[in-house]
Length: 229
Image 1 (cartoon, rainbow, N blue to C red):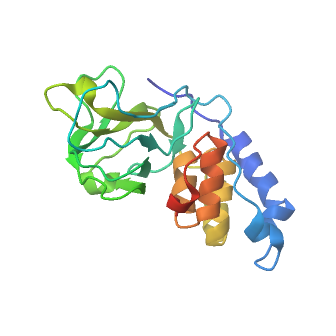
Image 2 (image 1 turned 180 degrees about the vertical axis):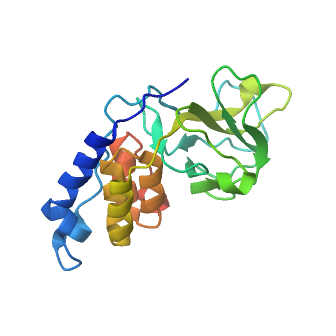
């Protein structure tokens, strides 16, 4: 599936408008610089997609408790990134006592881009997957589906806990990149979120509990505050 190519003019205009706003120029001493949470603006005409959370299915008995899994992704459209090997984030409600699988697939391709077992989370909270570590390089304009699964029974996949979401790599806009690089760390997530770059904004907000929590709440992910960095 090929996403629509963006024209440069609207994006540069958006960057210019942002840079000219009081929020963009607020210094460290200004309340707006540290208190204003990032606001995610889904890209206009973005690729369709969404997010599906994972929870236990059925009433079968198992030796260990099943966690719920939520991918840190928007619901209603494909989350965007400019990176060919972005870092992705997901949440688990508790320790995962089963093998954990990462899968990335693309439309009309029988074989997945990647399908392998990754280290299982040992505690509840938000965890990350660095695609660069696994040699994954996303092409531009393709809406990928990525998923995290807890493999409860390798012989019966229907029992697995699976969460999935959409992922689209787009061309970087020099104006947005320059604005993000020039901004202090606490402002980068807001710039990227306003530009519609969900996965890049989440990566920038990691380690800043308030910013990350605000982004997640905007897309309907209301997770325990104590478990958000």
